[in-house]
Amino acid sequence: MLKKQVASFFQKAFGTKPMMVFSPGRLNIIGEHTDYNEGFVFPAAIDKGIFAAFGDSKNEKCVVHALDMDESYEFDLNHISPLENGGWKNYVLGVVQGILDAGKKVKPFYLVLRGDIPEGAGLSSSAALENAVVYGLNEIQQLGLTKTEMILISQKAEHEFVGVKCGIMDQFASMFGQKNKALLLDCRSISAKEFSIDLQDYQILLINTNVKHSLADSAYNNRREVCEKVAGLLRIKALRDATAAELFTVSDVLDEEEYQMALYVIEENQRVQQAGLAMQENDIPALGRLIYASHHGLQHQYKVSCEELDFLVDLAKGVPEIAGSRMMGGGFGGCTITIIKKNAVQDFKEKATLAYRNKFERDCSVYEVSLSEGTHLLAPG
Ligand code: GAF
Image (cartoon, rainbow, N blue to C red):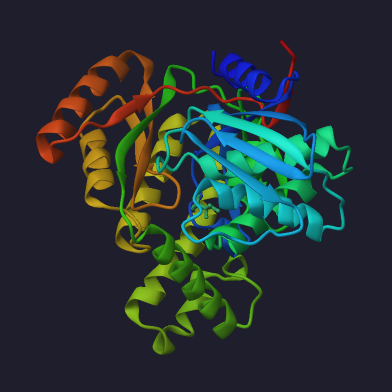
């Protein structure tokens, strides 16, 4: 449906058939704010994402239509810089600049975009967009970039054109995702172990708070600075290399908030590895306990949760058929991820929807997603 809309818009606007790409968003089972500490994360690509149609430009201009925003943008490859309040355009521009910086020649192109990842839901619509652009240009212009080079270009776009000093989890999951699999990613070596996800009589449920509190980006960068400061004090490359005992040796030069943040990262990193073992042993209750513990750390130590997310997680705690639930992604809004018995999904959906509406006078949205293939070309037609 979306694919058809994008393709036929392209054809009407530019008079040729496009090359089509799908680039997915991601969920994350566990491992939040560990990626930029060179630690471990456990994400998967989902069946929501961005459809992108590409073609060669007939003149010197690049033309991009973002159908969801009902906006178009034209630019010249010789004059690229981040736009003030540029929104989606900065992701496109940042990626193109990243490709140029990698020493590749980019020819003018046409691009049409449309997606079904709710913005601000913490499902990585940004990484999906970045990857769609770099992957599509790499294919149509035969740039010869590897997938790893592409995700580093995507990440750099976010750092330099959007101003969020993100880790590599989102871009990796979106690019390398696999059907019915989650990826236990080592963010230092950028290599992952694949896990076939069979949750037996459980399934994954995402609930979108439909809020995104405005301090999210600055708080994100600030957390990253704290982590780097602590790693510097410990004279290590990243918090991935620290233990709780080592952290304690610098506790007198850290304030309590900084100490708890660094401790959270160290503990979360361990939880991800324990989650891998729990998955291997098909121990869903153990996985669930780790997920609840992750939320506790994000709420009380790392302090990136919010009232709406905490409310949904607290609600889950009262349901015996739920193994675990936590906020997912950067925080301050977006989705929770919940591991719930299949036979309890309907009841919980109704319960959560009603309770959330009563409490916040707004609706949450519930998604049942499946784990999907990463960024890929779509068959024409
Ligand atoms: C955002 C970032 F983009 C990721 O790199 C990651 O740090 C995540 O927040 C928190 O785990 O999605």
